[in-house]
Image (tube, rainbow over all chains, first blue to last red; front, side, top):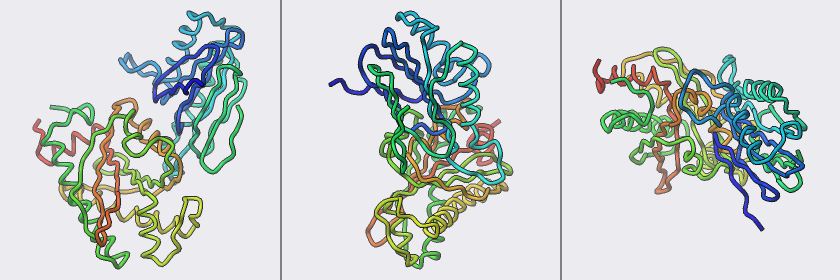
Length: 160
Length: 208
C-alpha cells in the first residue's frame, strides 16, 4: 500500500505506474489531472489563479496558463507523448454568493475559462470535468487506472 | 517605507492590529452580550500572519467543515473580512437564542443560518468600527454572505482575491469567554495592500 501523494496549493506532483495523487478542498482553485495511459504517467496541478501577470517570480504552478505548459514539458521529459495525454479537471467553485458585487468571488469562473483555453491551446482534450457550483472538492487521481474521484461536503462521491 | 506584503510588517505595525483586534473583540463581546443577553468577556487577541500553505492546517485541516461569513469592505479602505465559526460557538449562539442545538452542520435550518449570519455580521461590524474609529476613516460593509463547506475551499476565496500581490494573510484570533468556557473566534482581516499602507500611515506607524 502506497500512501497518497499530496499536492498542495500552487503545487504539482507526478506519479508513474501506481500511486494516488490527491489535492484537498479545492474551492475556486482548480485541480488538473494530466494522464498518459500508455506509460501510466500522471500529473496533478493545483492552480489558484487564471493567468500569470507581468514577469513575476511567482511559482509557475500558481497560474493555469503557466502551470499547464510547464507540467506538460516535464511529462514529456519523463516519456509521455503529447498526443496521448488527456485531462480531467475539477474545482472552480463560487464559494460565496455575494449580493451586488460581481467581481469578488467570481475567480472560479475565470479559472475554469483559463484552464480550458490553455488545454485547448496545448492540444489536450478534457475527458471529464466537474467544475463550478458552490462547493469545495477533494480530488483523488489513481495513476494505475486513470480514474479520478471527487469527495465533497454533503454530496455523493463522483467518479471522474 | 511602503509595505508590499503582510509579512513585511514589523512588530510595531502588527501591534497596531493587535490593538484594533483588542478593541474590536471588546466591542464584539459587548454587542454579543446585549444581543444574546449573556455576560460574555474576551481573552487577549492574537494577530497571526499566516502563509497560504499553512493557514488550513493552522485552523484544523483543509477538509474540516466550517461556517464562514464574508463581508466586503469599501470606502476609504478596500478589503474583505471573513469570520469563521466553529460548531461550539454556533451551538452557544443557538442556545442563547432559544433555538435547537445542532450535532452537525447539516442540521442547520434556514432560521439558524440567518441567526448565525446576523451574529457574525455584528462581530464583523465591531471590528470594522474599531478600525474606522481608530484611524478616523469611513468604511462601508456589504451584505454578509455565508458558506458552510470545507475550510480549504473557503480559504481559497481570500487567497485568490489577493493571490497576485501576496501569499500571506492576517488573522485576528480573540476568544470569547462565557462562564469559564472559551469559544474560538477567528477573523481574517484583509485590507488590500494599498489600504494596508494607507491605514498604517493614518495610524502613525509608518511615515512618508
